[in-house]
Length: 262
Image (tube, rainbow, N blue to C red):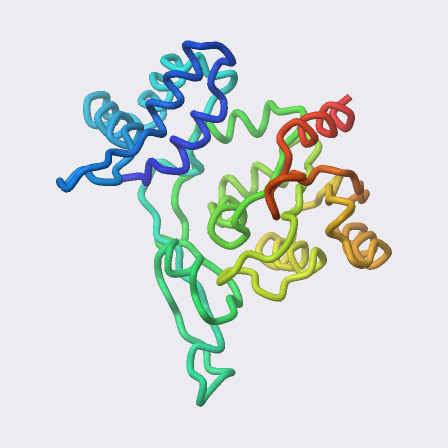
């Protein structure tokens, strides 16, 4: 089945901002603590999977959870079929550091000790979620990122119909850069490298705006040139959380989004 975890997190983030919404979001995120088989399982995952089994439709199940939360928006999967992520990695063999190995699975890719060259999906041509295609076509803006670059952001561009939809939409396209490297996945990546990797996986995708945090751009001129190569204007702003390292501040991010979207 589809992995429910990321879908659950997105739904919880969109909950209605009152006691009802926040309480149900907490329930969704709650993990059991016991010596039994349910230890560390999230309640929301079980709820989502139960709805999928009862309704037989991934989107219908997510919409029901969204109504329970009073979600301010809709959460859609990129594809309604289960997928695996594979990656070509170098540096796993100390005797042959340039040798390329293939690893499989989101966790394995995210925590590899090697250097990720590129990622792919298995199957390679999954059908896109029809509702997601409609949402992209009707949007005013599409925001790509932030998130785990190889295991959360780029996979959306590897679903052929969804990538075409992102290329052809009349919406403006904004890439929000991560605040830095992610250990095991993007070790050694500069902001420019993030954009270059994105372009390598979706060479026809044009970007309108690249958003970066003012404290995490070592070379603004270089990043501006890289953004321009994708057709984008670079916007540098204060969007980092002052309390959590390498986390975006939701309120700061919302403020700059409002300004850009206006």
